[in-house]
Image (cartoon, rainbow, N blue to C red):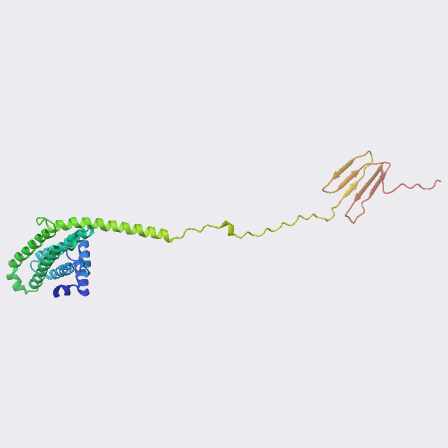
Length: 290
């Protein structure tokens, strides 16, 4: 348990995550799930198993002999722990008692023992010198295959057929996991959109009764122009006739053989009189008889 606890330290998990992201062909979903489980898992032994699986993945990066075989062993270990995590989450969502049963705890404890053994074996063999690794090359291959068979048989303990390859079981769960993540993302976007629409206040209704009314300003009366307008009065001889023009105030009057022209609003005297049909100014004066 001490070795498992060491693998859960924050600096080591960060180092493992950085190495894993640039190494083996393992789905990011698997790595993310294991990394989260290594930080906190609700079931005993699952947290330690996830931490050890990531630790094995880190160790095999230094393998020089049987490198491919060690990588496959690390991949099987990580993917098996991922499958177990998914199975537990599924059972918990359905309210299945197996999610917290004693049998599950015992099975997880046995799985943790197997993973701990793989971690010790990988660390020991990869750290050996070149000559010793050359001698144990075939022996290590046989041991690696034995561990992989043990991991595959562990599927039967968690409700999966042991004849199903771990990679196949992992692929099926990854597809389901991706669908769940997509649904969660859509739900989150929908909630964010609804929250944004609620946050925008609707325009307040206007209370027509309380709206102040501007006072009515009386319109001043239209003033008449009292300025006197120029007017002309003309009187012609030869009958009675009256012509009136309001714009210029001109009045023409013919009456009594007298023509009178009068202009008002003028400084000039424009009076003109005509008697007996002859034009002239004033009456005709006759001189003394000779």
